[in-house]
Image (tube, rainbow, N blue to C red; front, side, top):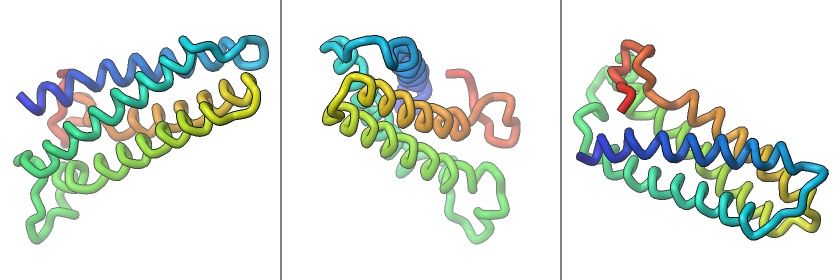
Length: 143
C-alpha cells in the first residue's frame, strides 16, 4: 500500500511542479505575485514533503533497498539504495529553498524568477530519479 501511495502521489507532485513552473514562466516580468501564486508554491512544496516522508518510510521497509556485499554492482540495488534517494533529496531541498526565497523576494519578478529556477531544477532531478518503466533494470511501473 505504501509503495502504491508513493508511486501514485508522484503524479500529483509532477503535475503541481509543472503547473508552478508554467505559472512562473507565464507571469515572469508582467504579472503580480498573488496569494494564488503563493498557494501554488506552498502546495507544491507541501506535496513534495509528503512524498519525501512516504519515500523515507519505503526506504527503510522496501525489499528493493538491499545493502549486500555487492550492492553497488547491481544496478537496481544501487539505484534504490543511493541514486533515487540522493536525486530526490536534492530536488526537494531545491524546491524548498526556492519556495522560501520566492516568499522573501523583494519584487514580483524576482519571486517568479526564483520559483521558475528552483522548481525547474527540482523537476529535472525528479524526472531523472523516477524509476520509469522504460528503465527495465529498475523494475519501476507507471503506478
